[in-house]
Amino acid sequence: MIKCHLSTIMGSHKMKIADVSRETGLNRSTITALYNEDAQRVDFDTIDKLCKLFSCTVPDLFEWVDES
Image (cartoon, rainbow, N blue to C red):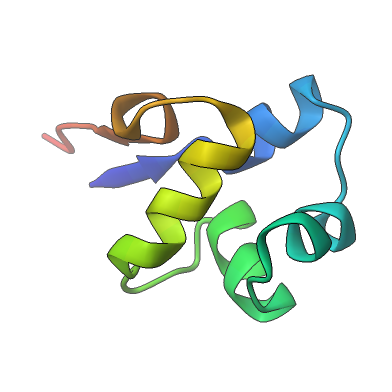
């Protein structure tokens, strides 16, 4: 399973979904799906914009967790 740490990163930067949307130009529904870990897929452009905004790397944003 892939875990998304967007909610944790946003919390540490004290940002709301509207703030991230405004800063990145990403749709609020895209950010909300990642925030709630409901996203089924993510575009590379989305990952790029989030990593740039938060000055983080892909492993900071996503983590693979073994379900077994």
